[in-house]
Amino acid sequence: MKRVAAISFSPVKGFRLAHPEEIELGLDGVAENRRFFLVGPDGERLRSSLTAWPVLVRASYDAEGERLRMTFPDGVEVEGDATALGDAVHSSAGSLDLHGRVVDGPWEERLSALAGHPVRLVRADRTGAGLNEPLTFVSDGSLGRLSQEADGEVDPRRFRMLFELSGCDPHEEDTWDGRAFAVGDAHVRFGGPVERCAVTTRDPDTGAVDLDTLRLIKGYRGQRPEDGAILFGVYAQVERPGRVRVGDPVEPLG
Image (cartoon, rainbow, N blue to C red; front, side, top):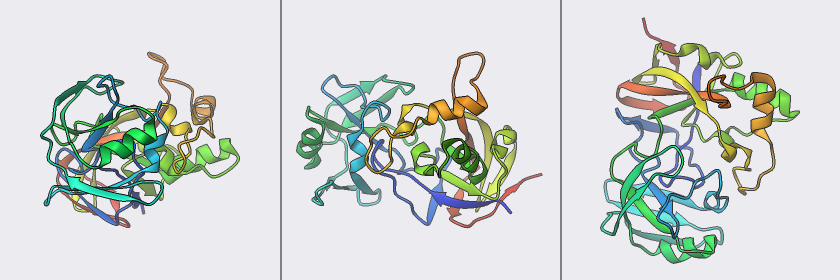
């Protein structure tokens, strides 16, 4: 049986992933996922594919109390109000067009020191704005197939997918486009493939480039003919909100 093997998300886009045992899905996905993003001196979003250091920082977000906590590589923790009352920001970097407001707090000085230039934290104006689609999935079968190409186990965290599935054949999830599945208490409809970028070449603990995942995927899967995109994993939409837990079955509907 196909099951949810792992859940991964981060309140701040690009930060180290958290792995809860359960999570609540709304129509826009997980409300806390990528709720915040970072911008540099030019006001544009710091893209994970080009920026290594954010993965060294952990964050936890209490949405009910509107508190955000960050833990830095030296172990220092800072916490502050997560309400966005600062300057308005509009970033069109990469594939996302994001609007939000700066969240002033005790993290700004430390984030800027890590980056070596001014960095501000921004709260996206709506849930799910920091994502191309609400949900992403990758299977153990696909990761196993890529690991064969790599001659060693490929860490699934490289792909920063919300859900990892067990019990699947290699790239079985690619065949689910348009199909509805029950995932825990939620109903989701699978969509098309996820376009991969250079963030997958970075070690998920250090941010260092250490594995040419794009070359490996391209070598055995090729590229999408119309635009040359390299594809791995799939998107999905939420049709019925609900709670999803590690170990929950993933079953087709209808």
